[in-house]
Image (cartoon, rainbow, N blue to C red; front, side, top):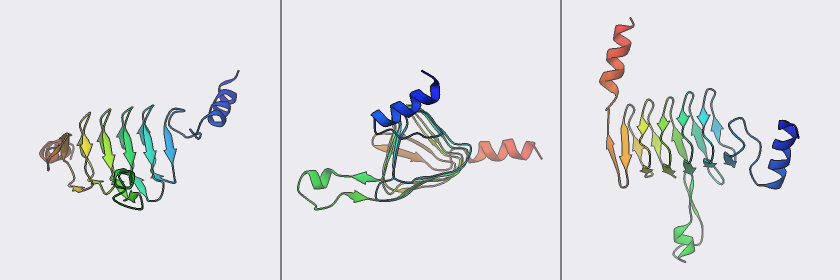
Length: 154
């Protein structure tokens, strides 16, 4: 079987629609994903019922969940609807493997989400390092390094 035939058959047999990243990246809804973005295998980008914006030159490792939906309150009969909130990854955000980005999160440009981090639905400033569960944010962690490198180039 040729590669394209396999990918078509795979998409038909699963709910994994064909995408430009990898056959095992699951994209739901209509996220806005800029150019020069990498999304690793076994990741899910779920924009169903809200919006996800991923800026240019982002690098999303395998096994990452970016999900606008939180259904736990509905499951427990504490709410009638699934809570859905938008997510924004600005330009040049790195997201480490096995991380979760929850609805309501905005991650500022040139930031790093360390592997295994659960990102809450808050605004994170540019050049930050986000790590852990519960997450900690080291705002501006990469700013001086970026300034030094780019000052030397001019």
